[in-house]
Length: 147
Image (tube, rainbow, N blue to C red; front, side):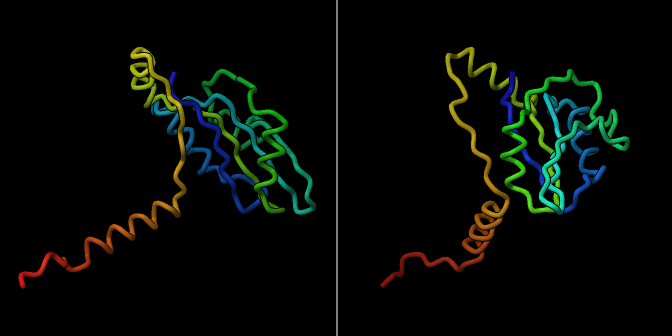
């Protein structure tokens, strides 16, 4: 089994965009990931928190089809994720297995190892690092002077 990750994808409206779900479905169909569970969480303008399965929405029915339904995302996940949302926003909660990494993970386990930690680097931090590296590359070289 490859690494499993719980991801909260937040959207600035109370309704998911079908194209975001379609992109996740394409990853599943490509074999890159296995969708273990998914749930839609909405925080209404009035502050009420609602949770629903993808198949509860006519436009999303079957979009991520072909999966074995494992209901692993629970009420505590919904409550914690809702805390990340502004009123009038929604989120797609997904639990995925990274199939692309399964072979490497199996080899590590067979060698007696284990995946001890995994950290997701925020996009903003990556942009900062890339900008810093670009600035270093563009800076004139200041090698030792020959005095």
